[in-house]
Image (cartoon, rainbow, N blue to C red):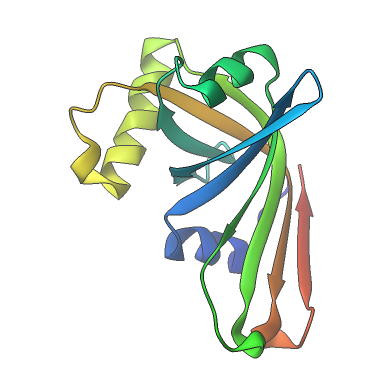
Length: 142
């Protein structure tokens, strides 16, 4: 597995929410979720009920894409990340508990929440960072 650029690792640490783009039967859908980054496995961890629309779509089609970005008024400060990969509901107890520990460390207010634990295995990342020069891209693939 190739090592992530430090700028991408740092970006994950500075952001807490992602957008999730999915589709089923040629019908797109999107959702937002808080996330935790598992750098050992290169997965984004999210919590969501399998009964939500996006949970049902993910069960049928695990391919995902999305973005992580803040809000900026100065174009020279824009930073945003695009990702793609596959998502699965974690059923194996040890794997689920490990992911939950990372998630709760990042979002302690979620303790006690009843939700499925999902892992997005990241296959491709592209960070745009205008602070390094307009349109600067840093890319990574698994």
